[in-house]
Image (cartoon, rainbow, N blue to C red; front, side, top):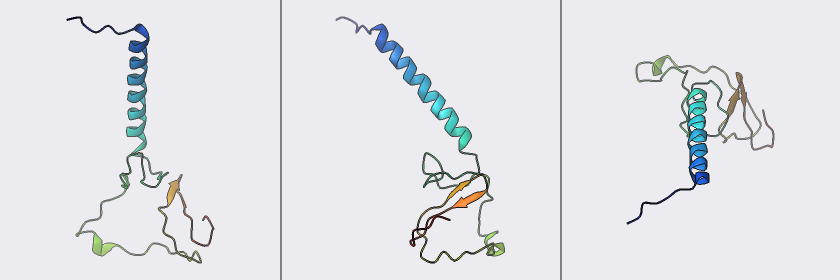
Length: 97
């Protein structure tokens, strides 16, 4: 039985793929601890978790209060995006705030 032989091009492509995957993983793990919430799930893995926020628990829930409110004219059903301490969201009247 012969052992499989791989071409130099295949090995090189496999190497490049592994390096690319490692770089993507490294950049994602650094980004996940950012305050920015740039897509619908917060990060590339759709975790919907603010890493620098305090956890809400039964002990801290009674201390919560309304921080701000905004009337957009119509319903808001989209997940907001946060970039550099600015909140962005669309409403059903066609505006982006």
